[in-house]
Length: 166
Image (cartoon, rainbow, N blue to C red; front, side, top):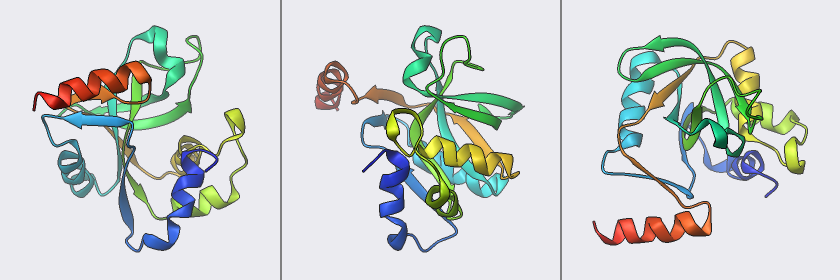
């Protein structure tokens, strides 16, 4: 696949509901059920939901980053914008996109029309940003579980050791 957006498009024929839960395999969240909490938030606000965590400002260029439109109760916020891997100067916050999403099926319409972005990939964050511009509501959820980064070799080894203790 040419990025996360392309991978999601390949699963379109499997998605029948109005919303679907997407989990990225290189982002693990343990000790608290983030997906269950996100489903609760989705039902409460009747909106899409994305996981979030604070990251070191020096590392924002590794992540999609949120611009927070409005704070909500319970470590949640309305997402104003999502910027894929911004420079430190252009990052609107240090709240990063973590690989848990509840997305509307309408995202497929955006992905099918989307041009390739950074690195020649179809980024899911670009399609999400397009939906936000069209006034679709997205809630960011600062999860309570422990985050394990399996996206680098060092992170994968540390995550394996952490999981072996469970």
